Length: 456
Image (cartoon, rainbow, N blue to C red; front, side, top):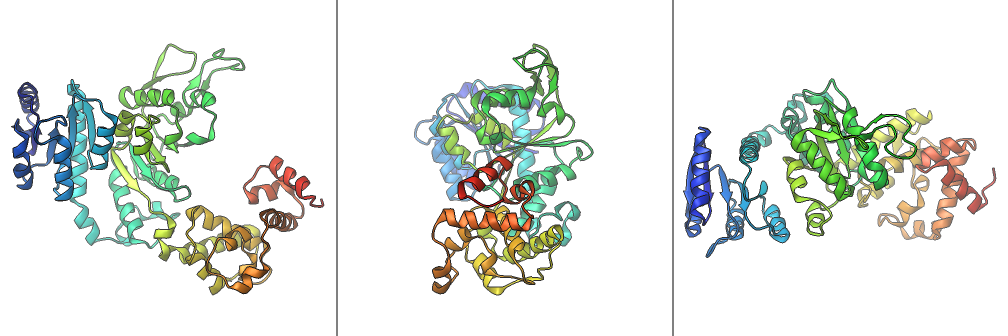
């Protein structure tokens, strides 16, 4: 049985939790009213889970959380508090708290949270064995990760975590900068999961105007608003039975967050314009490039939604922390775009590779892909040279010589104009194809053609 330590200065709360948790016959319980004794009990290493009050005399809950962190004590913590304090909640989360629950405690939710926390702990205890066998060859679902090009140890470790997370139905929160591959990880989770034969629906929460998102996300009934000429199912209903990937979750408005929380808690929702609740069975995988701790502190993100989403957490490293993958990825993209554009650029010059390795890649893997995409179009030899790289990249790279620097146009407008001309020449003046390559709309491209007076 798992051993649970409960620390609270209110004896009535201790009595209730002791009786309630013992009735489940799943845990060994130790209650403690005097928080000054907590350190010795934690240092013994006998406990798997800590239920912790925050507002206590002498030694506070925050003091105890800091002690756990500083002494690297292997215990999972759930905070139970009667004080709704955003700053305190943020501090607790940063110190590794699994969940933060307000009193009075909902009994059913507490049991679910404890079981989920213990399940996560069990997985984390296997981390040492995972590290010892860290290899792409030892993945049980190696083919699922074939589109994620890497030899980086941190990424391979994440793949092993993904295999473990995927077989549960828990929500997953993926942290990572834009372009770091969050959707690829979400797809891998879905492909391994028991939902793999159902739909994977990907939605970028930042791509919709907030006033339209509710209708797109939950669907609407005929006549719900002007222009709603028929019933429409939303993303959540479309993903029923499968997986819904919500990218840039930090962009959701607070009203939408409340509705999403209901989906997670009650597994139901309402279409816009309807009073009939619809049951739904969907797994939520969320991703963010924002610091959600700061968003919670600013009042832009609900902490209860955060805890519901962050049952399992994955932190993707940016490309600048995966320097060993840069050449591997560059070669992969070179082959991919050679095939796409029917080119024969056989290799990447050492000068270009040095430029790549000396660059911070704020756009991560996606930026590297776009660089190769752009450069291979204008390269006329069988080797990718620096002259074919976009000028914005060379301007912001420290790995080229003063001679190179002298011949690079200094005007951003001139750089953009020349690049658009090169792409239009490559596509034989096909504006739709050029817009696709440039990752801008056709309307935007036409506007720039007029602006720069580029000949048709």
